[in-house]
Image (tube, helix red, strand yellow):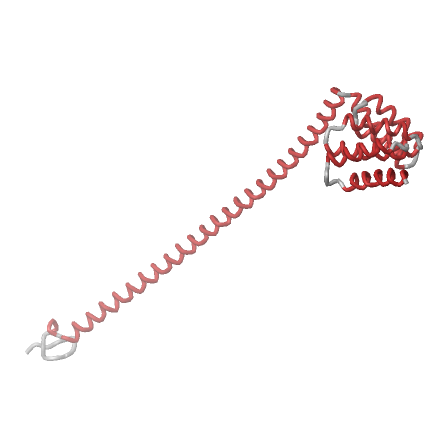
Length: 234
């Protein structure tokens, strides 16, 4: 009778079920252990890969942020440079324009400087100085409306209404816009009224209202002139 040396049973060893089971279990255990080790290695490899990937992605992100910051800095610098360049060009254009005006019309430029000086003297009630300076300005540029009107006011302050009237009349002749015309007409009307020439005063007051029918000061001047004539008749 056969004897199993593995389990001491009455069968041959190669027929032993326990041995087969134990061998299968051992194989399973070995396989499980191998799988676990392999899984552990795979997990470690994945973790290492993920860490490397995350590190690289972080480096790429930081690089992109640095590039974006550099682009913003460059954009700001270019904007500032453009503004600075534009400002300098504008200043150069103003300077060159002023130089051109001086070269093309030196008399008008000098007259304008004298006009500014005359205005300062007039504001400070220095009538002799204002008259002298503005007369020089008129000699250089006799068609400048501003010079003529201001000089007329200087003569009014000096009680020389005849000279004031002449200045206001010249200002009307050289006026280029309706605004200038209506103001010159109004000034002429007042000068004539102060000189006692009521008909002339009415004439120029009416001209001012024709230039601008909604000009209340001219309407008031016209009504005042007419009222003076009516009053004198009675």
